[in-house]
Image (cartoon, rainbow, N blue to C red; front, side, top):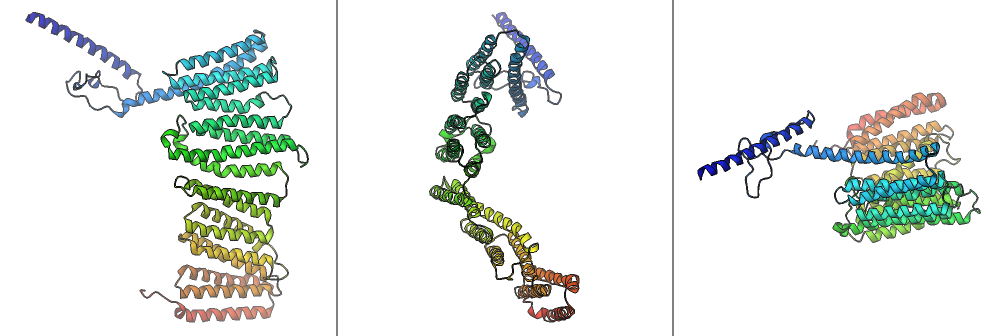
Length: 588
């Protein structure tokens, strides 16, 4: 009996040793295949999965197995990356081969045209069928095959109509539309964004692939809107951002091509084409500007139902694309509408104001809920931009400068009261534009016949005053310093432009600059403001430089005497009373 047990034990040990030897051989092969930079897998840590409740035992040492290292997952990740690129490159090369085969068979006369078409259709069917069958096991590879089949159908349809000329335009067009519908259906069925992208690109490109030289803008716009309806519906249902952005770029590009090729400059010509294009522009405004906002709000209410799936751009792009489209879409809509209809600037200004009302009401409606508040700010920003555009179209010259300066001041006030960063940025941009506008007006243009009391002077003076007043709303010291420094330079330029054309004008400019600098100096001393004192002292030095460089050459002798004596005495007076005027802090 004992001999039988010993025999059985020996057999088990022999089988175990054989299994260990086989496992060691497999590990040696794996280590040989690994790159040199990787650590080899030790046979002391290799083990089959133990039964539930059993302790993992080292095959050689009989000790518990250590925890798995992170390096154990590097190889599968690399394999997935390699597989991803290999199947993409492979299907691309296959499609190029199909295209080259069509061309080569034509040149050699090997196959009749119907046989070539049949080959293309058969290849597309084979790829789609194979892809559908392996979907449950190899999802990504399945979508690559199906995408290749869809692309093969597009190539076949193009070659059949444009190269082989075997079918009529309506038949070819119907075939390409069917392929687009098939791509959309398969993308929804397999939850694959890549298939919808292929369908969107192929669908939007169909009119150009089948172009015959005869333009039909209403038909092009109608077909484009039909394709965009499909992509918009899929985006709303699946939330694929890349599909939306592809539709945005493709849709606006097609409408722009129709605008430059089919809309004549004469307002009375091509009325039907103009209305068709305008309808497409309005459709794009709704699909690209409104629909993403609606979906974003719905998704925030129920993220589990409406979360984005299968779109890699979702990981990095977040919801920023919704805000980007909310701002860009109305601006593109207005620009393309203005190019379509040659109305007066005032008419478009009133249309822009109507847009302000629309976006203001939408912003107010969205602000009533926490979910829509961020989108409310974005629509309010659009309203601000449209106000600026409307003012630029309705007003001209000095009146426009007054209006823009007032708008910028109000925006700074709104930004402070509501903590609305977009309003603050808009106000900064407005003031920056006004500053660039005023530089040549202050330093390189002539004053009006009536100094100071004229529309140009008062408009510029109000702009300068608005730029100074808004600094009291700033919490940032840097913003305040920059604004006040620019205001200071603008005041000097304004005095130079307004007074220099007068008789002995350079003398009046020097006096005005001096009085202004002394006022700043006294204010800086009384308020113990070091920055203000430094600016005042710098301005006084500029006045001294002007006395020697400009006034000596341009003014009469009596003016030189008066100015030099006057400013010399003024400087002595200030130096004598400097300490008395300086109101230091009590703690100093």
